[in-house]
Length: 105
Image 1 (cartoon, rainbow, N blue to C red):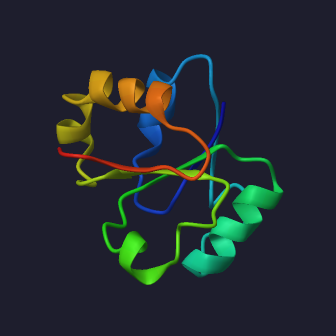
Image 2: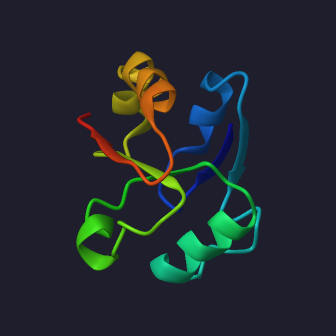
């Protein structure tokens, strides 16, 4: 699975997502791109999932037509996220095209 980390998603998380290809918006030079355009670029680049900490994304964007899954981590704190690695990996197994899921952290 091709995963894109949005700004705010702790990069150390990538080490715990074995078997997946992970890139960041910074690495793609997309760190200043607005959410709507970011989702379009990610879809066009073949990403399957966007992992973000932006809890307002679903209110700011019409996600019903998107071809990318969105996984929202409800914290930016790496120590807290580390306690929920199993939940994050399980969510990645569940997501499909156009799905949206939030992980309580």
